[in-house]
Amino acid sequence: MATASIKHSCSSKSLSLDSGVMTITSEDSYKSDFDDNSLTPLSPSSTYTVSAIPNIEHSYIDALILCQWDNILGPRLDHVWYVTGRPQPHTNILRFVTGQVLSGEICRDVHTSQVDIKFVDIPDKGVIIPAFIFSAQGSRGISLQSLALIIPNSELTIYLHQADLIHSWFSRIVAKLRVLCAKKDFGTSGLADLSSWLLSCLEMLSSLQTVGLPPTIQLSYTAFHPSNSIEQDFLRSVIASHLMTFSRSVVMGLNDERVNILVYTLGLFCWDSERFCSRAALKGKKWPYYQDLCVQGCTKNPDGSYNLSVRDLLCSQYPTTIIDVERREVMQSSSVLDHRRLSYETLLEELRELYEGEEGYGNRFTNCLLTMVYEKHMFVILCTLYSAEHSVL
Image 1 (spheres, rainbow, N blue to C red):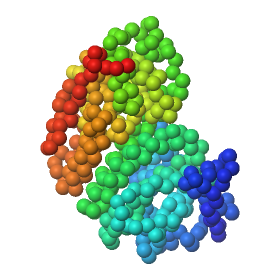
Image 2: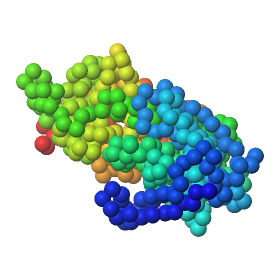
Image 3: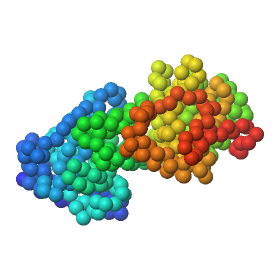
Image 4: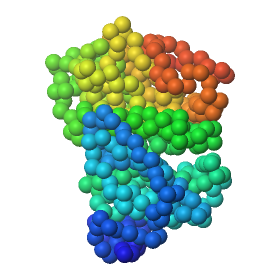
């Protein structure tokens, strides 16, 4: 039997104690007959369900797990999502990860609404585990639960660049998951809803792998090259608004090459870590707007419209600049001063609709033109047009 210990190392190859990273090592290497009595016992009550997440072209995530703390069994694995085309972690690895994620949370107050982020490094198993710890209403009352990602440790660098982006997406997913747990039988329709949200998240990460911005952008790809002429007033307005919205911009147009000229131009005004969370447009791909990406290029429908979710715009951490290449328009989802309040109200409205099961909740995107005014209940979201004379470079 392998014994597990927690070791905090301050060497250059591992993170320090202050970093909050738990490095888990075992005295013996992994074997197929690995057994640990501290983990969930192999009984009928410890079985879990499995599903697959298909059609992900590029993914550095092998699997996702949902687990909870059982007052009798201890850490219990409930469901596993395997990413199609990626290596499937062994069952014993899944149970080992479940134990490490939840075993240190026994004294946590289950009545708190806080979502904690835990990062576990298991070098001898070759995986890193970002986990989101939260409490939710289950069939046996309120319980401690965790939604965790299983990532090969060889992908640590790219994960660290995209960690804030993943945390933002999963914080919203966990908020909706807690509503599902309190509302319905999670094993039926609730699980299907959660699977669709995870699919959207992995599709977003896959798009970054497909046409993500390079660390170094050559000027020949940007509007500053003589062959890529763009009106100076329009370019000034684009750059000014991009900086005003904390480097969060979506560039939309009918021609992907013209869209990408502005995408690469705005990439010059991003930090290196922000370029890892940015992506160009790709011909033939109708990607939607993804919240919290830094710069993203999207192609419009032939009639000039675009499937834009104003709710996703407002749930982002920062306001977003919306750029229409054909119309030479630059808009913002909301003002910087109002965005935090509007984001909070929008998320509450989303959770309320999910809880009450209002018709139309499942319609993630709404067809709209960029110049639309979106009005709902007690607040109005204005996509404010910034002309060149009102922009400050």
